[in-house]
Image 1 (tube, rainbow, N blue to C red):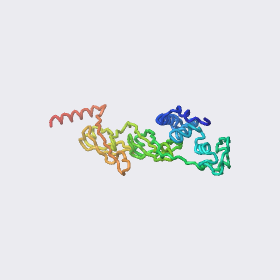
Image 2: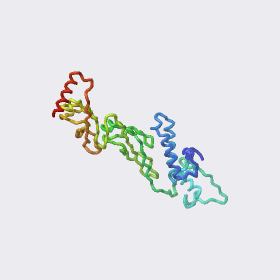
Image 3: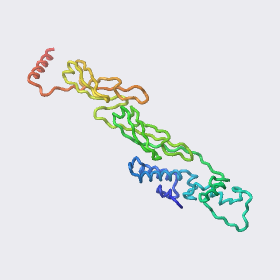
Image 4: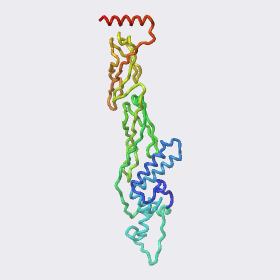
Length: 306
């Protein structure tokens, strides 16, 4: 077999099943994908070679031709026409008849130059081309991780599709764990003229040190000094877009939750946001002065008399 051995490229023998071919292709494509080997030109070349081999061996008609004619499989129909009815049978020109004992030399149409084109061999003249049913390419998925800040504001990621092209994919605000971002037509190539599959970016969101997320809502703890919890006051609350001011009513209990409407996560496809829920954590004073201790003692005595 002249040229590249597509079976060898995929690490298979010629008896490999369709399932074997698909499994070998997916394993090798992931291993040599340019995203996995950034800056490695040899890996990129290998990736393209793997795709070429899969394109032929995954299509039954192409594989059949390849098994017989090797890297000249594209000319299989022309070869068959020449071998079966050379210049005078039902598949060739009329008016020529072979004499007794005549012999014929098999000629590659690609070597015939203008003559081959004139007689139509390079175009498959006088042959019937078998067609096969187009088949859609497989979808592919890439996993990506974003910060909570990126999930709030939106972001982008650059990926490489199955043809080696680099794509910039927009990640919309509001994505959550398991969100799938579709890039139509950028999956595995179709078979027999079928459409390509789609590419999906599957998102996971990193845990955050300050916020807990539940769907569109964010949860945060806010420290409130004892004096403000007792008498009322104002404290700052962290949010993903900056500091917010929160009014604390008098006699606020430890653990009370305040809802700040519209300060949570954006909702994909909707012009609204979830809420920010701030849980009060009352902070007791430390390192009291003698005067402060005396005042607290007086306060205790007053409470006992009530």
